[in-house]
Length: 521
Image 1: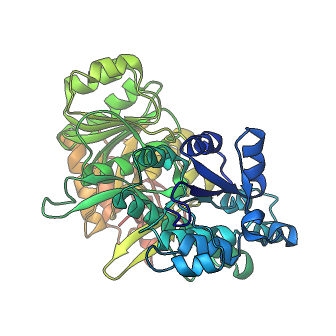
Image 2: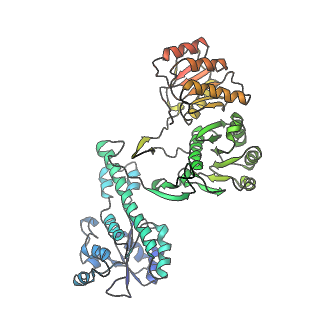
Image 3: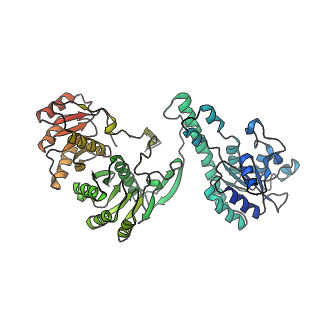
């Protein structure tokens, strides 16, 4: 509280996001706060009838350089940084008024550069200088004052002031948010300028801002602590931004598997269903309805589907939900929409986790990075968004696949992209027949995929086979031929490509090379 007048509290407000601004300022005025503001924020408040004092009155110095310099003044930073029991004399000497609450969010740099016509000059003009400096000053001095950057926190702060002063725990939390806010802001600017000036795909320094959405019971194993974070810029994107309709809290492994299922289901394009177990699709299919897609996906490997993650890329209806709960145990069911009749059905199985992911049908994450942790660091790469429809396919065998087989090959190739390497997928008529995942040798993945199909009595005669990477030897083709595979899609690029192609010709198998690999480690 200001030492000069213990009846007066001051709030400095300067925001680009005007959400909740007027109601906040009105409530603060009712709590006997004096409101100090700048530029557009002050204008909005005046138009709403809120008494406002211009920051120029506080500083006794006009805004200059078209508003570039307005808060960079000792009267502002002294008011923010003044410490109780230390700085009373110097602030009295220089007539510096103490500030008790700072509400600031920064120039919309990210939305500015997102505009396709944005120039570097326009981007630079939207780099906030005074805002970050004020936030850092207030956050540094959080033992005395309160700093707020997000409109979602306005009501919490108002409630605290109505009861006296915000508690230390709240001020600490909000100070951390302020430093995160300025850190993310600087990261966005640095990344943009690196890309524009040096044409770098990846910046020299990378800082990621995540917002914790939940503490988890444990990590991959019970002795590991864990939490889930949402990247600030993704809002509702992906699994971290999903709406949970019912069920127990999601575990670390649930979240990882659900993310894999969502990505694969999205890639199908057509109405489809994917069942994932331990981050691998154990069944996937497209069909005219979600029910038919689910039934085709489930038949691939019912044993692995037990306790799995089921993802749809269309709304989940009651008939499909009923088929699921009568046929298998599911840990998680996810769709872009859970219809009312499906909710009624699933409510009978209250432990089943049911999620809505609103971006399931779009290419969410397009342009985002894929990160992998290392001890002492992390790897960053572009997401693998290539689809078989977008690449040039090269027929390298005497036999060419029919149009129907090309469709099967596209489908198998799409699923193989989401299977852990070494990956083999057998498919026909929009459904998987066998999946071989994560083996140290590719030929073993072929054997496992064939074994899975045999276990379920699925006929591989005439089916398509996809391999996420090249065949290093002909043995994988030989085994596929034994089971009736008639067409193969793979990247090619092995020193033994000629040997592999010759094997395909010997077995009258059509083979297509993509020139694109889809390792998924």
